[in-house]
Image (cartoon, rainbow, N blue to C red; front, side, top):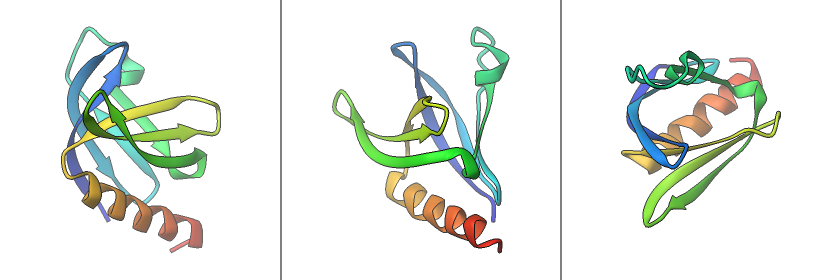
Length: 99
């Protein structure tokens, strides 16, 4: 399964436009903004390290907060949030079951 979404990453008080790909093992955020560190330009969040995923808000905008086991939190403004959450749950369940 590979699904793509247009997103903005909430990063240092601003929004970084980009995209997210859900695949069989991870969420990958990508942006072409050169003023951010390389790690953020190609951010990979493996399902095995995700602690929780929650609906949230940034000001009045509906977002998704992904909490990692290492304590990091990533907030995404996802266009098509409900579809994203449904497909993410499906992908994470399939990963957990070994499918």
